[in-house]
View 1 (cartoon, rainbow, N blue to C red):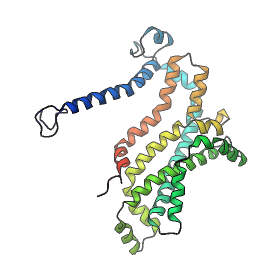
View 2 (cartoon, one colour):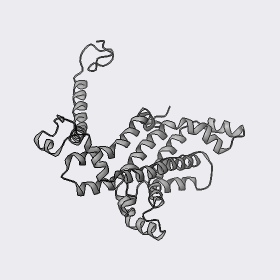
View 3 (cartoon, rainbow, N blue to C red):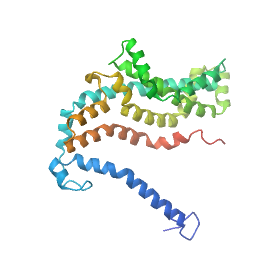
View 4 (tube, rainbow, N blue to C red):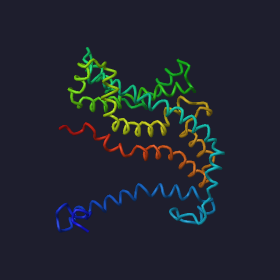
Length: 288
């Protein structure tokens, strides 16, 4: 193995670096700590109760019981909760990204009175913990007659999600050379055309990273949904999982099957967009 390809040697060095060895050991240990619970959940989801009691936590099932998934799906009525979560997430995530991208472009590129004050007001929204807003939020949504509706939960999700996205996108758009937008405007392009033709394509990695974060946050959100969605026909997947756990906590195989089904969509979305994730998070962080 060449020096360049050796994981324990710096490029061009002939000796093993003990610091690199320690870093690799640390990374492997941390990865094992993160992966171990998922292995336990997946293995348990494929076991019967008798097998769970008779084998170790991390022992693979001698005979996989795939029926746990279908039984958990039917008993927990997850077809309803998955549909509700899908509708809310599919509407909220793209809509939030579109609003955030246009707002960030306006605040970073359009000269207008009070632009800085508006940006600071939006940034201030990222500093407010939503937990302290649950009571007044319920009062507001209830006064509008939106309790137990998709609109009633999507609007608060947008209100708490957009400020963070605007903050990230504003920093990215601000670092884009002004010559690009100025040349387009001189050629007669409108601000919307400049945003759509220039800024939107180059911001795709950032938008992909924000899409992953927003999808996971919306899909797994619990507290706000618990307050606003009180009718079980409107429950999202985390609320359905809570109800399933309270009723069937002793059925370990089906309970862990329900957990796997809950986290699987977010995992799939991450795997689809993960190639953009790191580049998107670091975009605009280093200036030339």
